[in-house]
Image 1: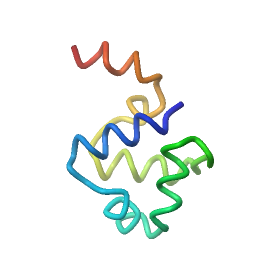
Image 2 (image 1 turned 180 degrees about the vertical axis):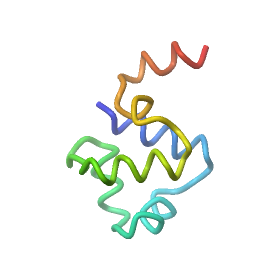
Image 3 (image 1 turned 90 degrees about the vertical axis):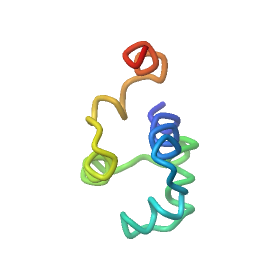
Length: 72
């Protein structure tokens, strides 16, 4: 569910999966798996992503539709 939000936030900041992976010290494949919902994220990693992109954790974990409505 939140994988699409991570991807949207990452792309909005003009970052690649590799860029995010490098910031977090993980593989690009790990980022891909989070974005496609094939792997869950640890709370600490979620917090680091929020800090990297200067967004709230709520923005990452809310459903995509709720985030789109808030941005409008």
